[in-house]
Amino acid sequence: MDSHIVLLPGDGIGPEVVQAGQEVLETVAKIFGHRFTFETRLIGGAALDASGQPLPPDTLAACRNGGAILLGAVGGPRWDNPSARVRPEQGLLAIRRELGLFANLRPVKVFDELRSCSPLRPELLQGVDLLIVRELTGGAYFGKPQGTERSEQGERAVDTMAYTDHEVRRIVRLACEIAQRRRGKLCSIDKANVLESSRLWRRIAIQTAADFPGVALEHALVDSAAMRLVSQPASFDVIVTENLFGDILSDEAAVLSGALGLLPSASLGAKGPGLFEPVHGSAPDIAGRGIANPVGTILSVAMLLEYGLDLVSEARAVESAVKRVFQSGLRTADLKAANAVTTKAMTRAVTAALDELH
Ligand SMILES: NC(=O)c1ccc[n+]([C@@H]2O[C@H](COP(=O)([O-])OP(=O)(O)OC[C@H]3O[C@@H](n4cnc5c(N)ncnc54)[C@H](O)[C@@H]3O)[C@@H](O)[C@H]2O)c1
Image 1 (spheres, helix red, strand yellow):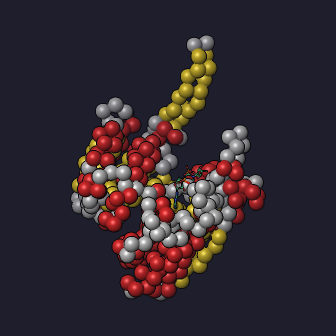
Image 2 (image 1 turned 180 degrees about the vertical axis):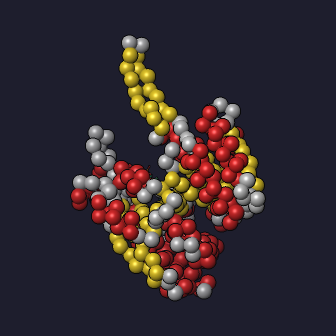
């Protein structure tokens, strides 16, 4: 297949890991007979420096025309002035909004070889392979009214957690489709014993999942689900939840893997290109040293292939190549390794494993 991929390296270690992602995509194209073309654009602090805007119009136009987008990370101490009117992170928020990306997918799979990196006991991590589908454009972050008012009694601040049936239906439907392709288990997380928006969420989740007879739907309250995520993480397959709960739970789940640098993500809309990026930030403390772990980005490439381009065998091949490299004992510095390898060496090992597997 032919596909045009927009690369947004961003700041800090972003360019180093996106370079790794591009090399993996080029290897996939060579092995499977696809033609991927690439276009690199500015976002975040790098774009602010060049144009005064964190998401310049030419970057947005390129993204709209692309088949998929691979992003590194944005932000860093250079742009950390709290009184600044524009900040690098606004580039990320703007691109999600402009492309209508309402679903954020965060898989967490614990590689057997890396169980000792996690702060959890290794036996709890056996078989952990879960995926959180977080609603990204609704809930308390965007609901109106929102603001702070002053009165004679003092200040009062308000946020509104609001959802429409349409917003719930489209995210639960996507989660059901994903569950169908995995182990067929879907856990919808809410706070239906207290919140009205959660009661609507639960009702619509039940209605929507009824169209997917192969998917077993269960419900969990967010407080007990938070405990279960660290006490029985292997009991989850796909989780679907609203924006605020998903924000917190996906960071909690990230701890299971033991290293931020391993985790991928995807943000999808109803149509148009998806945005694929590692979960980590721009890691200014190690930027420019060539030691960043590229695996989060490489696994984001696997998600780009699967969810962005519908190339499922290619995605599985990338995941198998990463697993093989870990089995061979290769580690980057963040994985508590004595003989850590560089970003480039890790990437070369993954592309070599891809070549060997085919
Ligand atoms: N999506 C994004 O672009 C995104 C996400 C989070 C933070 N940020 C931004 O990144 C900057 C730094 O934030 P932070 O320090 O809180 O989080 P961070 O994820 O950048 O770094 C946290 C720690 O993890 C390490 N780390 C992260 N990714 C790694 C990798 N691939 N390989 C090896 N080590 C890795 C870093 O060295 C650091 O010690 C801030 O400006 C923040 O706003 C951006």
